[in-house]
Amino acid sequence: MQHREHIAGIIFWGATALSAGVTLAVLGFMVILSLPIIKNDMILEVLTGPWSPDHGLFGILPMIVGTLCIALLSLVVSFPVSLGCSIFIEIIRPDKPGRFLKKFVKLMTAVPTVIYGFVGVFLLVPQVRGFVSHGSGMCILSASLMLGLVISPTMILFFSQSFARVPKTYLNAVDALGGTQFQKLIYLLLPQAWPGILTGIILAFGRAMGDTLIALMISGNSVVLPTSPLDSARTLTAHIAMIIAADFDSIEFKTIFVCGGILYLMTSFGIFLARFSAGKQN
Amino acid sequence: MGKNVWDMLLGFFAWCCAILLVGSMILIIGFLILKGYKAISLELIFANTSPLEALLFKQQVFGGLFPAMVGTFFLILLSIGFALPLGLASGIFLAEYAPDSIKKIFSLCFDILAGVPSIVIGLFGFSITVLLHHSFNSQIFPCLLISALSLAFLVLPYIIKTTQVALESLPLLLRLTAPSLGATKLENIFLVLLPASISDITSGIVLAIGRCAEDTAVIMLTGVVAVAGIPKSIFSGFEALPFYIYYIASEYSDQFELMKGYGAAIILLLICAVLFGISHWVKEWLTAKTRFSY
Image (tube, rainbow over all chains, first blue to last red):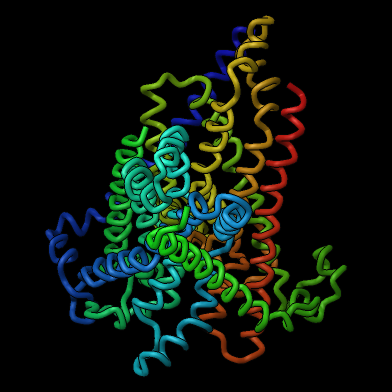
């Protein structure tokens, strides 16, 4: 009997160590496979140069900039709407309409990203093309608008969760003093819930950065440094998806592990930040 | 008490945001359904083959969505098969065995894994394939097995987290009853704690199934192909619904193919909506049941 308990404990321990090992192995593979680039002192060139394999240039700077632009713009588009929606859920109509919206947002998380991409190609891109009247319509703006929709559930759910965590007695105190809803939001909820809001923003940014399909399908994938939201751009994720077909021994191919490593490190850094800010509210 | 201007503005802003969000989702889903509902038919799935023969794998389906649906189904089955035992065991360890300091390190690990972009997981799977190809057997190529394994890594942190949270949120009263009657730790876990949290765990697993069904980036790098038919073994290439949708959006050649893309998108959306519904229902229904029993 004692024996069985012991073995079970070891099995559970082993499983956890194995799962955690996967986390480290992913980083390990990215680093080891980009070693040829680091060893040849190409890393600086790769991180800051332009991409033109025909001329022997393998810089991924345009992709880094593209990733940041698309993720940032989608955050700018999505943040006000998400904040408004969570205010709607928690403050304006916590009754039926609010509950409906919350269920709706949860349902949104189940919609596959490839569907957003698909509708983006056939509905949003032609609209943007007509509006801008030049180019193909596949640009940073199109991708950011769609991506904004994809990341909004993450933000809305986090925001309303941290609003809901503000103690009820505080809310009653504001009501008892005759405070308006607006005052309640500005002087109580936002100051109390800002760590949760920050956490939501960071996680949403991580999602926006890590998304492949939307950028791949509707941002145009050009390798030139973008100068305006109407320019086409390529993200790190899309770059990986496009170069994977290249020859395994080529330098092109080795740079995608640098891309993978950068994505891994940026998202982990985001997790650290999110944990830190989430710890603040408790 | 009259409402002041700021309150009215706030209400107006919130209503606008809510309507904008719901409106754009309705626009997206509505566009898909309006454009694609005509494509939905048995022919879309089975083409010219008889459905019964296709379902019994007696006849290959050419030109229909059936191989892609079967591919997605096998993919889900395999990757959940890999991820479930590992995830459950890790979740149990974190909730019941691990001391606080170890728990912190491990759960940070799993949070990071949950945040890693799926394309990076796919790249990881791909490099494992290359490694195996070079060092073990040159017959190993990206295939169903590798895809399923990579997808398992993708959903692993979700399963761990759900299991851990479900176990940890059980009331202390329930947690102590069986041990005080002489049950061992293992008996307590398997006969009391797990059954009591089964609804939360199941609904988490169903959500993980949804992620397997929808993810495209991982399988794109690890073995999905546009035309493969029903996969012959776990070492062969396969088709999958989400990749098919992506493929059609970028490579379609005529209106007929495009309509098939719309059809596939609607079917995938339906599958994910049904899975979400099941997860929701399991949570509500099973929670009501298990709460009744203690």
